[in-house]
Image 1 (tube, rainbow, N blue to C red):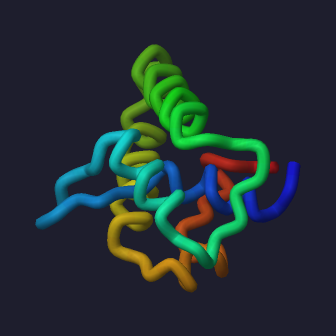
Image 2: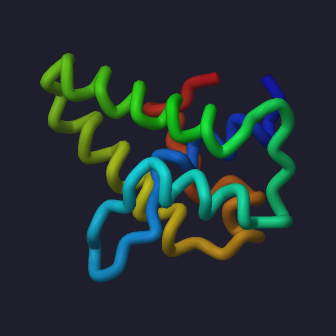
Length: 99
């Protein structure tokens, strides 16, 4: 998997939130795809959103509050970071994205 894609997935876990709100997966993916500094290969906003929703559901099924909060924080990071910061991987969390 390309490092750029890993970075994009890491920031999925991020947000367009205002005042600490967690953005939806759709908002997060649209934010990522609107950043020209990110190179997203082989993924569309639809597949990005589907992957984000799947990961969110997995953490819900596991009833893992720590991972759920880390995932929300990652999506909030995406909302708050600049496109250049996203490309540099500032929102990457190896707990969420070990690859």
